[in-house]
Image 1 (cartoon, rainbow, N blue to C red):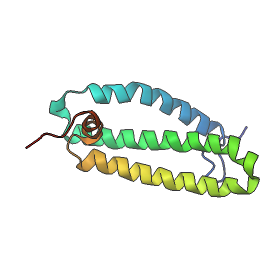
Image 2 (image 1 turned 90 degrees about the horizontal axis):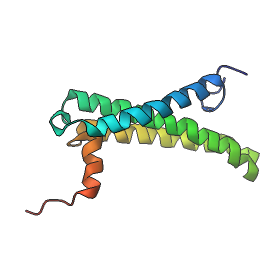
Image 3 (image 1 turned 60 degrees about the vertical axis):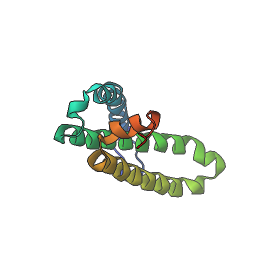
Length: 126
């Protein structure tokens, strides 16, 4: 089995991709709860912003590799010619996801944690 693919869009090819995907599974399972349990006093500092960007990169890479596994399994059942365009779409969506989550991590009050907490907390009435 190859270590890695000659085509960078084939994120699911090779032993390196499988190993990286499994390592990201573990990292997300451990680091995401830690990030959300950090006290609010640390939420707007350099630590939170840099950890938010690291979490954004991990989420994006994890979904990029995982969606390539899904595309490899299911897109050829529809049409083998659709696999390369599907890989381009996945790569584009991954770039948008990374830059969007990174922007939230850097410029939003409270970072990613503050954004997610805002989903459950109603806005304050003035």
